[in-house]
Image (cartoon, rainbow, N blue to C red; front, side, top):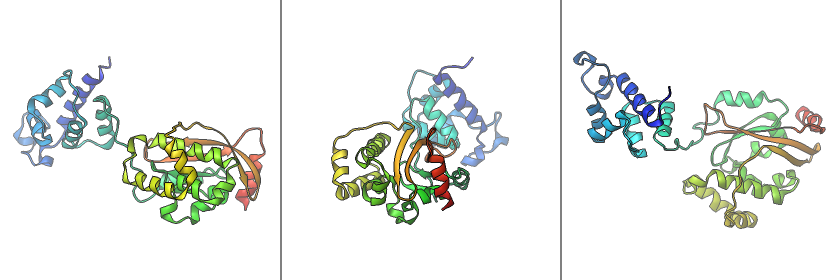
Length: 274
């Protein structure tokens, strides 16, 4: 029978402690020990917590360790990112906020975007920087490819690029929707430097953004139909989807597919054919 989160945390810590090679943390090796792994007092010392407190954790006592304690113990026990996230959840803390991708979009995700064929698709990080796209999206919106890297941010382009204004069938409503969804997503990171810089730039560049941001309105993303007025193939009715890869939680994949009952598939095919 599965135990409570507290009991599972205790059992998981015990199992990880037994798997750590003492020599890997500068302690006498396994030959000098009767049992594998680290001792409780060693974990406590290395993590900078009291022996009693750590013992209570492994005993499943009714305590709630701070995030700082959980992070320190996870580091001492050499936990993987998945293990660290797991103990954070068991201890009642949210997982670490995804920071995006270092060095661009992982190749396997770029291949996924490319495999979508005529469906425009792109990838964004938590601050909405665009870090990848497929050929269909480059034809749908050339600004993704030719924007300066520092300006390649979805929210920035929505409010400052006239080509995006022309693409959105109802720019006033659609841009406000983007803004409220962005605010909801970054609500816990409003003081992150990247978010602060982006908001400051947008407030200086767009009166419409400035008014919308001051309203403090938020909304969640929902898949649904979006209307576009494309300069080459005319009106497009597309379904808008957003996916988060399990192995890259710092990336959102945004995909537009032809809405059923419309001629959008034919129009996208013509656009892709160039």
